[in-house]
Length: 300
Image (cartoon, rainbow, N blue to C red; front, top):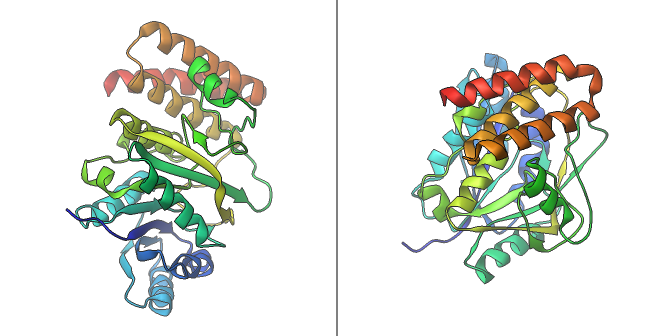
C-alpha cells in the first residue's frame, strides 16, 4: 500500500463557535489533505450551527459526521480513527477543537521526523495554553531526561516540554502518528471513557510503544490551546471529582501495563502521595479513586 498525505482528526461537542475559530487554521496548511470531524451537539440548534460552519470552511477537504447527542471523548476519537482507517494516509494528527495551528511548518517538521526515522511511531509538539488552567498537567522541564527517568521510576507521567528533540516516554496531547499504526488497530481504550478521559492519551501512546515504535518529542512544532470554557467532551466538575478521576484512571493505567504486583503497589502508592501533596484537602476523593481504580482493574 502506497501511503500519502496527512489527515487531521477533530472531535467537537457543543463548541461550534470555537471550531469556527480553529478549523481554518488547519485547512490553511498545504500539508493537510483532509480534516475528519465528529461534531456533536446537545441541541438541534447547535447541530445546525455546526453544519453552517462546516459548509463555510469546506472546500472538499472536510469529511464529517454530525449527530445529536454525546459520545464522550474516547468514543468520539475512536469514531474518527475508524473513519480514517484503511484510507492510506501517511500521517495522522489528533487535534482538539480548541487547538489553533499558527504555522503549517509545525506539521512539516513533525512529518520529516517520521520520514527520517522508521522506528519513530509518533512525534509530539508543544501545546501553548492561553490563560490559566485550574488543573494543569504535571511538567518537569529538567535536563538530562530527568522527567522521563522519574516517570519510569515513580510510575507517574511527567512531561518535559522544554528540552528536545529527544526520545520521550510520553508526549503532550498534540502529536502526529504514522497512518499504518491506525490500520494495525491502535484505539483509545474504553477503560478510560470517563468524564475526564484522564490517561486516555498516555495509554494510546503506550500501545504505540508496545508495537515496537519509539516516541519523539520536539518543542519546535506547536499549537495554541484556546482552552475554551464552554462545551467540550470533558464536563465541568469540582476539583475533588477531578482528583478522583485522576487517581482512578491512573491506577487502571498502572495495572494494565504492569504485571508485577510489586510495581503496581509502588506506583499506586507514589501516585496517591503525589496527588495528596498536590491537593491534600481532597484526600477522601483521592483514596476513593484509588480504591475504585483497583476494583475496576480487577474487572477489566
